[in-house]
Length: 506
Image (tube, rainbow, N blue to C red; front, side, top):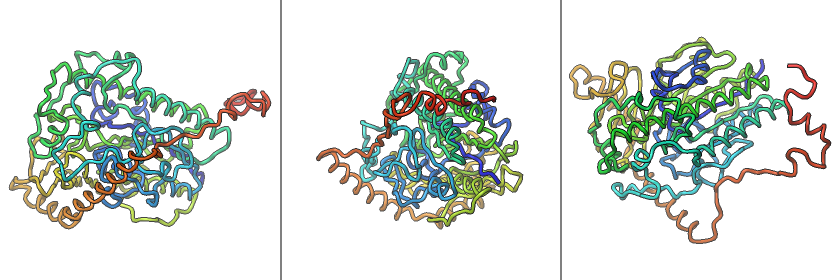
């Protein structure tokens, strides 16, 4: 059998609730809609940590945050941790990354043979939080309400420029793979939108009637962790007007449509290079965005708008279906291996995996009950980890210092009714509490988080004190080998960089 190519297109901070593909009445996502219309849509997919780097490290390694110490946005991703890129290389794939992955540490590849762009965020330990001073804000890089208050339109931003570069180099590489007969390949195309700042180009802003933008519908959250997040982002002291909230949501919707357009551009390159029919295309995100729901913004909590992610899959062998069973980003590594195993033997696993393959669920097999496990160990936590279990219709949120929360997501998708003390759900709540106690040692995790924070702050202080040796990725580029040069003939360049080649019939 022929191994299909794998192209994963990742958004940053995209909540599925704010996409047309998942039923939002206003947000326009025609390219994601088209993939869902011919493929599979997962309706209960979650991140494993509602923060960029921890979520991405879990996604790549198929392992939960605490197994690989991927606690926060300044935690190093160790080079000895195998990723799906490593395994796919062993199964005959060319592996490539274009765009963001927020790798921290000197290894900026983690199994990718090629990386086409630098990262948009720093690769050092500068963003290390301090759990021994959990109430102290780090103003240099903590979220605040400026992104909401300053939302609107602009001709360009650093995020727009980054995503334009990410898409351009990905499309170029897709055509190069075809012309150079590279088959199969796995490419991750990872964009920064619709992540704040909520600023959009006019053509995307103008897709929407400003007065029709819907406002947050749920009351402010009063649980302790939400109150910590509100304090951390200064939402407890910095008020925003209804117009500022509407502006932020308008720009987010616009940037979601911009991300969707880039999905379309990548798929178009696959189609025009005659590779779409043998490519499994996956669209997802690293986490969501509260976007004002419950009085919260950004992520860093386990409510649905922060914790859920879109997950759409289309391609050879994928049936048109909707999958209700809960799943999470750690499930993608074993899924990729099942896709690749259509033409190669699976290699030995270097570390235990926490995920399960989703391939049976989209190819006519049993989706199973499914589950999603989450661990949050970063800024605005109470210097203790915050856990989440989603299984069946229930979600359970637990932290050693906070009252637990239990929600029936099927009946209460906005999570307005905490059932943990409801007599009819005492047994369910007790079962989850026992599972949390058996699965996690909060005191041990807390001690390890603090120990790694000490290590990272020491390393970062030393790196700032001496001559800087940056870990930030420098994409290799040799302009002497690009376009028309005297080392090759004009015809060679023409044939090498045109598809279809001159004289070929489509």
